[in-house]
Image (cartoon, rainbow, N blue to C red; front, side):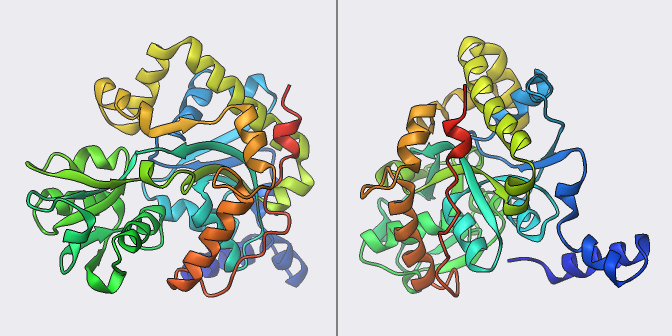
Length: 334
């Protein structure tokens, strides 16, 4: 999923700014982690909007870490930016992380932000009452993302495959707009784009992530380089997250104002997302990182996702889990 043009541009800029083969080699080695700032990417998902609160309330600085919090209008672009080394860390799902790892990216999951418990939805037009009714219909989704995965899971449960529908590949915001405009029969999307999709009269969710417990965990994922070379600062990031969650709990009204503004939705609309995103406590993080044999355990869920993305062509090779789940930071949270 890494753009060749991005790689070429990085090499060109490095060649201009640094002379010699040695300098060029050093530059091509993820320059993002070499400066004083740590660049964290995030995009439109309720489980990641707390980062906006951390920035607004100065909690990164309070925990002694210099952060450039970078917003991405396109979630896919944020995944590519981390894989290519353009940023140091990103907020992304487990299945998208595994797809990047299978492509050769060196990444570490250091925090579970949340589990999707309903805020990922397959929304269909009037007259479609269930997933089975999607057979032969046009369904818009951003290929390779978590909602593509949710769509495939739902189709599988309905004894259908992707070949049974007409998949229309679009970025998530464009997919939601296409559905509202009547160009497709259904859309797979995540909040807050679900709010847009449900503006179509008569539309309804025919499947949600609530029906697939544990299938969509969301994380702070860092480059392997950052985790190895700047452990103290990664620890500060994880500490900041839990302090932010505590601040939100104590200051709910102000926090919702900040997060709804970042999500470009009304306060009332944002409040509807609460039940659909379960923010993880420290204990839930520890439980998730502990190896186990249920969907609550990351290693178990990762195995299922790895099999699924390979069998459905979302990745060419099965990802290597060695060093992927790094619980040292959550364990060290005060």
